[in-house]
Length: 195
Image (cartoon, rainbow, N blue to C red; front, top):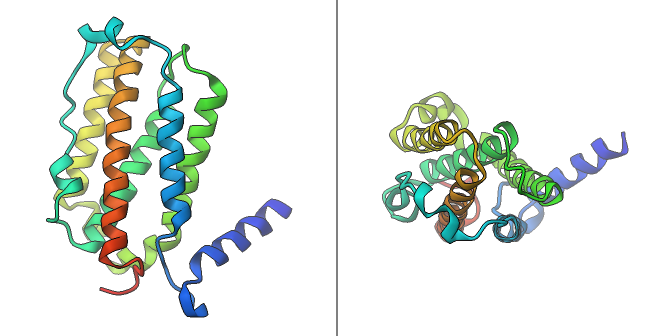
């Protein structure tokens, strides 16, 4: 019960913007969580990069889409949310590398979940009635296709430690790009209520 109350209080506090009105503002905490998740991924490295060179693969990170200026605010928000959700799912549902420290892996799960919860408070306001339409848009489909390629690669490599190392490095690239997208959203106007 205390956890639920704490969670509700946290959601209310995150939702209040300047001036005390209920709104959706990208918080500094979201950026801090993103940096912490990158640090955790970096600390999860257990293999020498040279030992996995034969397993390298270009997954086709849609970097120009994520870091470029072609997305509108609602599209950029949807892409950011989808990238974080897919990253969370990847590390939560796939067979994680036995070489990884389970404490770091759990901290990464928690950090990604926190970012998603922070964004979730804004999701309805940003997407509103466009939710079903945005789920089918090309940028979201591009992100899903990118992550499907990663899932396929892990399965093809039988979830080997080297395959997971390659994916860990790729997720660092993806999360760095998502951090760039978060910064862009903040510059577009941290208040996600405005068009």
